[in-house]
Amino acid sequence: MEKVLAFLKENPVFYFATEEGDKPRVRPFSFFMEYEGKLYFSMGRHKKVYRQILENPNIEICAANGKGQWIRISGKVVADDRPEVEEAVFNVMPRLREIYNQKTGNTIAPVYLVDAAAEFFDRTGKYEKIVF
Image (tube, rainbow, N blue to C red):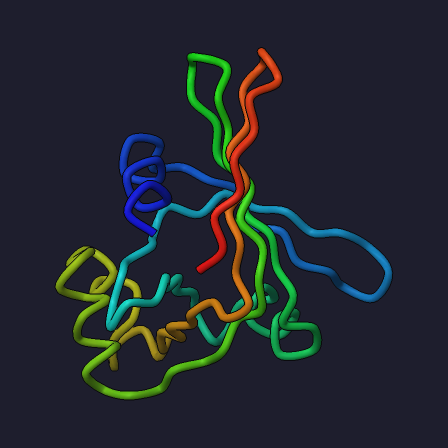
């Protein structure tokens, strides 16, 4: 997973794809972390993306760089409501506390991937798959 994390760190905006009914939904994300050997993402419980993953936990994300390289990560998300995970999210990205707190009423929903695979591509046709 080290190569996956390195690519995401170098390209901090990635696109998170879900499904709503029979329609794809894609939006930019920037939060990810490795915790207990798993790749985590986070979102607000009040957002459509959260409702979409509850209905269908299969997701894909995609990120690219200016060198013609990209990554596609797929898997199933699993919610993790443990307080220590929430605290880890806020430690990685402290500004999320401004959005998710008692005053706003918004709560954070950390999720991690299972049955995950990352595919690396470049415009020359190079391909590598990592299962994690």
